[in-house]
Length: 179
Ligand SMILES: CC(C)(COP(=O)(O)OP(=O)(O)OC[C@H]1O[C@@H](n2cnc3c(N)ncnc32)[C@H](O)[C@@H]1OP(=O)(O)O)[C@@H](O)C(=O)NCCC(=O)NCCS
Image 1 (cartoon, rainbow, N blue to C red):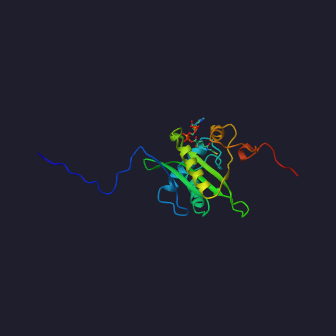
Image 2: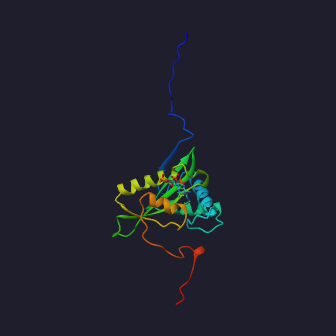
C-alpha cells in the first residue's frame, strides 16, 4: 500500500481561460504592456473605430502614444487580460479644473476584434465606474461614433445622450469656418 501526499508550493499556475481586469500603475508600464496596448489601438483604428487616430496607424506610433499617455499622472488605465495577453482597455481622465472634481471623461474603451462579445467591455466599464464612484467622479462623459454598435451598448448600460457633434474628427469634416 502506498500513501499519496501532496503540497502545493508557490501558488496556483495561471488559469489560461481566465480574464482579469486590472489597473495599470501610472507612469510604470511593465514590459509588454505598451506593446499589448499598441496592438489594440492599431487593431481598432484598422477596424474603422474613431479612437483619435487616422488609419493607417503603425504599431510604433501607437506605442509612442501609449508611452506618453501612461506617463501622465492623473488618468487611470485598466486592461483586460486573457491568458496573459492584453485584449482590452479603458481609461478614466479626471477633469482638471478645481470646479470639476466630480467629473471625468471615459476614453479608449477598446476590445480587440478577436475578443469582442465575451463580456470584456462590460467588465472594463464596470471596473472603471466602480473606481470613479469611489473617488467622487460621479459624472462621467464620453463621445462615441454615431451609428456604431457602441452607441446602443452605452444606452443599455444606462448612459444618456446629451448632444451631437458634426465634424468631430478630420475624416468626417462636413464644413469649415470661413470668417
Ligand atoms: C464596444 C466594445 C468595447 C464592447 O466590448 P465587448 O467586449 O465586445 O462587449 P461585451 O461582450 O462586454 O458586451 C457588452 C454589451 O454589448 C453587446 N454587444 C456586444 N457586441 C455587440 C454588437 N456588435 N452589437 C450590438 N451589441 C453588442 C453585448 O450583448 C453586451 O450587452 P449587455 O451588456 O447589455 O449584456 C467593443 O465592441 C469595441 O471595442 N468596439 C470598438 C471600439 C468602440 O466602439 N469603443 C467605444 C468607443 S467610445
